[in-house]
Amino acid sequence: MLDFRPSEELYDLKEDPFELNNLALNPKYSEELSHYSQILKNWIIETDDKGQFPEKIRSLKINVGNMG
Image 1: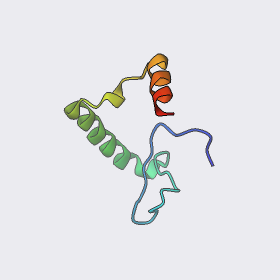
Image 2: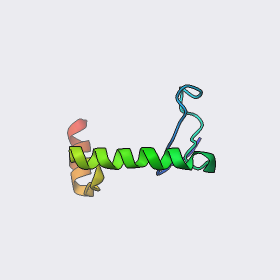
Image 3: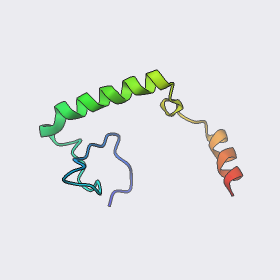
């Protein structure tokens, strides 16, 4: 098990429904990875998704404090 989350992930959900085999680093899937990366980038822009901006540590601490 990884101690970190990879920057890119790509899974074959039919063959690997539990998402255990990340295909993002496999050169065989580079075209698919590029294709879906572009779809994601477009969606982030179209929806103004705030996940594109890093959160400030202070904001994270406030949010975590409000959860408990």
